[in-house]
Length: 502
Image (tube, rainbow, N blue to C red; front, side, top):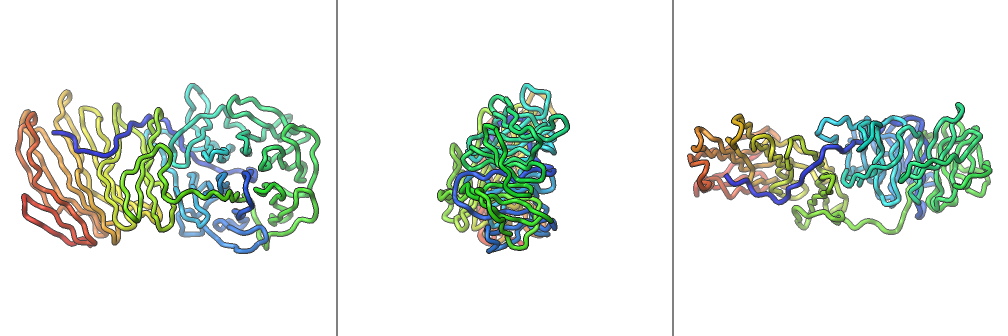
């Protein structure tokens, strides 16, 4: 039987790290050039995250108990201030400023890799917006854990020449890394070139918590309980105020830091009296850059392809070669926020997983995940459904599954050639096809109409056809699948059938 047609096919290479980030007593992060935006704060009481202006105004709480990002820790803004990365239960999340998710949990690879981060090496961003993460899985050609940069959807992995033994990493607007290592039992700050791995010791009297100025020329560090400024070339430190965890304002004129009793303060870089940011007590803080160049809503990432588009939503697929990494993103025009829906890796020798049929209705999308080319020609196809307002998956049970057991021939083939989704609640329906070899060359083609709603998965119609395996495929008898609201219709050998979901 000819394979069911599909719009996208991508080959994955096993070996993506994932991410995630056990946070120790790391530094505040460097902001990048721009105007001053919001402070994102991990409060000392451990209740969610706070977003607040530097004057203490417009305080709001996100990632509180019961939300998908509850337990978020160690926030760090992207260079354009559009998103920030956090650690949530040892997984990396990428959030918008309203607390909604680009990716509430970046997926683990499915190839058996551990995907856990190294506890001492925290996440960060390079100037071009790529997320930097560490992994316990070895980088190529190495016997040690590695550090890599990637787009926030997990595509475009590039290994860096950086050891995960560094602590409190901070990335400059010039792409340099500042980090901490023990020297004669004292923490000292180094500057590292991530292309070569070459490290240059910056401090020699004991220092920690480096944070880069927006122009990359100076750093704020903590020395003996004091926040001090030092040139990126080294030299004498200038003490500014007592405190911890400094982070530069994007305009380069101020620092936010933690004072006595974990109180959050702001001080001018030239010196003066610190001013409290409301009554906030914190353990982490980062300062949002406002670049004046907000991303275009629902614009497909560079080198990606549009799978489906309606006036309300756009579904894109981002594929990177030679790594063979793939992610599916969905964006609603109503809020302009991309959501990472899926990202996958190959689990079979010679496999070529991809996305087949796609249906979009209202705020929902359903798509067919394909995983073909496994041992002996077997295949697996399943429907995945998502709420585009949040990126959350919706339970779906439609699948076409082959488990071949005769080596050397293709005793079974399967596919899903039609999928539909309800614009009310994301209920789904699919037309599945499975071809089995009874006694080669005689085959049986089995078609089914399967639907999944809030009450479960339902097998609504089925028809079988006998044919020769080496002959033309018989004409399909179940067709014209359509879902309007909760009313599902399809054709059974030319006769219109219908069913009500939910």
